[in-house]
Length: 579
Image (cartoon, rainbow, N blue to C red):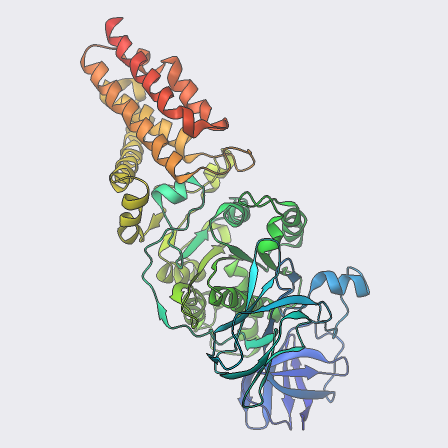
């Protein structure tokens, strides 16, 4: 029998109920409208509840019903292409029922329970199956096969299993102990899904963005933070990562972002075409939209909803990229609820457990051996929106303590229309050491050395710029002027990309290597020519250098770049003869 209590106190999204039996994290229905909430504190017979909907209009004395369940997400065929709110209510379904303004207390199934899916068994009668094992396949979208898995902790000897068309609530498999299995399962969002072991990060996530892949690589199963001030390109960078990275599935959490910004994402994503398959990108995407004007408690839940869905697809053996935009808004939701609970505030009013919650979230990333013996990964990329761009604030610092990649966005670069506006002097990656062997084996033996050389040139340029600002570049020796030219070439030819250009938006990793080699070939050839008497102006202004730099916008550039470099080197050598 469900336990019932009465509302005793209301403080925004935090409601206190009395005379009810409850356990931590039980889901309850609050008031006559049945608003969804979750128990977050217990004091004797008093239960403190965070409500996931607007609490205006509810009064003390109204009834609270305990469902006895924890906050869980529904997992099964039909997740992909969906757009959910923070507690997994499908927004398009709700819009059909009530228009653009959602009514409080409404509920909707996470996906269509009546839709039939064609189930193909992968085990036979008499087989013994364990939790996490795949028992059958469903073609969820044109590009993704959904693997139906035994719920972790369940299992047994298969008594019967059928192929055919079923909806997600019909029995597809029966075990000898009498347990039935459906295609849909539920999982509590605050409990990480189990796996056998976590692998070291030795495979890079290829993003197609040169500054990320080449200078600050991210491993599959790794975690990255993108802090940056407003307007510096966090959302555009994450969208590019979602579209072009070599992850097989994308979970995009719009956590507390501005409504108009989230609207752009919701409008654009369904029309994006996956460059790998030519199909709509939404066919391998799950979106969670929880804007800044939606209930604050649901914002806090949206991050857990997203990571649980990502873990589910990871368990099938897929590489999943999870974009959280932005974790600062998630932390602000925690701060608001913490203050309503009258907890002792930590730095800048955030709760004392902020760093712990951030760590728990990012620790759910990783490349693992799943319960069914396959390899799957979740790569977490979290945007951080520090007030005023000050990354010394607690959310940025808590994030940087956990993640191993820092892609620091720069408002100055964004104003110069330099995309991606990632500051190459402030950013860092701690993965190169473990990824270098992969790059040596799959791209080129000298790949790590080329990366170090380019980074070094950018560092030298930064030091020389201080002198240039005082006395001008003409006062520098010719070799240092050449260094400035090479560094400018790295910035404008290599690091800068056009995120909306059909060719330049994505750059193949092999082409990235060739472009980096072309820059260093120019430097070596120019040094040699100048040592033999050539003038810096003549060397820098050879026509083929301009052709090489503009050529990256043309299709088939990877096939023509080697010939362009040969012509450039010939023209540079000719400058010696002209003197």
